[in-house]
Length: 153
Length: 132
Image (cartoon, chains in turn blue, brown):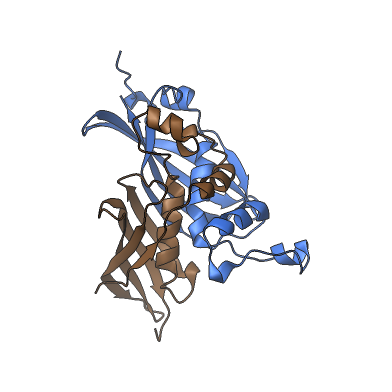
C-alpha cells in the first residue's frame, strides 16, 4: 500500500535541544582537522579552553543534522519504517546568523514545509523540513534553513 | 573565476566511529561492512555530514575568517566509501558590493570522488571584508 504523506505538510515537529559540547567538537576536530580551531588540550584548564571558543563552521551541518534528528520520529512524523526502508539526505540549506560557540546550548524548532513525490531510478518522497536554531540562553538566531529527506518507496 | 582545488584522502573507515558517536547515529550502514554489502553496497557508507564538513572546511579556508560564511546550499548526489579520494573545488559566480564596504561573494562549490562522480554540489555565500 502506498503511503500518502502530503497530509504531513505544515506539521510542526517537536522542540529539541542540543549542547555544542567540547567533547563533540574535539572528537570532530580529531577527524576533520581545522587549523584555526585547534581542540583544547586541557593544559589551559577546561573553563578557559571552553570560554568563548568558536566551533568551526564545518561543524554546523552536524548541529543541524543531529538537532533535526531529535525533532522527529521516523514512523510517527514521516510515516516511515526506518528499520526496513531506505532513507537518505537530500538537500540542506543553511543561513548563518552568528558563529557557534563551544559549550552553548541551542534550541531547534522545525516543521514539515513540503512533501512531494519524485521519480528517479526508484520512486521516492521528498520531505522538506524548515528549521531555526537559536541560543537557549539569549534566544538569538544562530542558524536557519531547510533540510530534505528522501524516503524511498 | 575558478577556485583552487584540493584533494583529500584516502577516506578512513575508522573515522566513521567518532562521527557516529557525535551524530548519535549508529546505523550499521556506516559501521558494518557485511551489513552494507548485504544491501548491495560495496562497503560501509561515509556519513553525509562528514562529506559536508570537508567541503565546508575547504570553502571556509579560502575566507578571511571562516565565520565570514553567510549561507550554504548543498545537495547530496552520491555516497563516499572508505579509501575514496575526494576533490573539492568551486567557482565564483557573483560578487556584490556592500554599502558598508567589502562585499558578498557567491560561489558554486562541489566535491567529487576519484572516479569524477559528484558527491556534493551547491552554493556557498560569504562576506568579503574591504581590502581583500
